[in-house]
Figure (cartoon, helix red, strand yellow):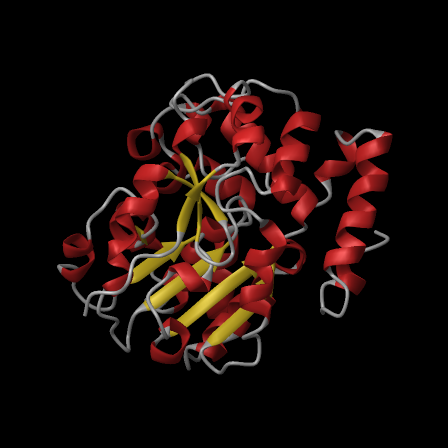
Length: 307
């Protein structure tokens, strides 16, 4: 079934030149588009690939979601292990990209249609940019991380990216992120699409900070979600494998052979609260106000506001 194209527009003319000057590849900002009712920022070629929204879903599909740099690789590895009998040896011997398939760009719909079941599909896209009724049709695990840490991690990723390097400083990136001129933003529009479905039986929402404190409890939650039953001793086997520092050294996940140059590494520091080390006084106060306004009436307010 083919779907109607999503609404798409270029960046406002008043902002185009300012944004363009912050990237090393001069054509990149002119290729930025605002897509869908949420006006999500996307690179033009990624928007054109959204024809894959008509991908036929399967009931045993496993989707892993979260905003970019929120811990989706970590959650995907946990989910794959829990749904594959905690087979750490298989996870070490088979590259992550062969087990979990990145949905958002770079591959046509036919690629995903040709995958054998169950398909493990990882995405940073908002629900409105994904195949319709996805969460009604199959299960998704989703991770939320402090948006200030997300922003800092995105900044490092974009600044060191060899294709589209960000030339500005952290404060300039902060302003673009808030404006919705970084790929996948606006952040809170995106997040609220998922929070609106938080009670759906096919959606499990986890928090990065909770995973960091107790990965074993997170593994139990994912196991229960997929109706898998393991003893504490069995789950202990995967905790070391899922340690952030272990994953950073794991070539099956974080290798230049798989992911390209060092700037593209998927697992960086993995710290919670690292934004405190790099935000200046203005950013600290401004971000507090930004979070308070946008987390109003959500479960995230108590967790992230005034912290």
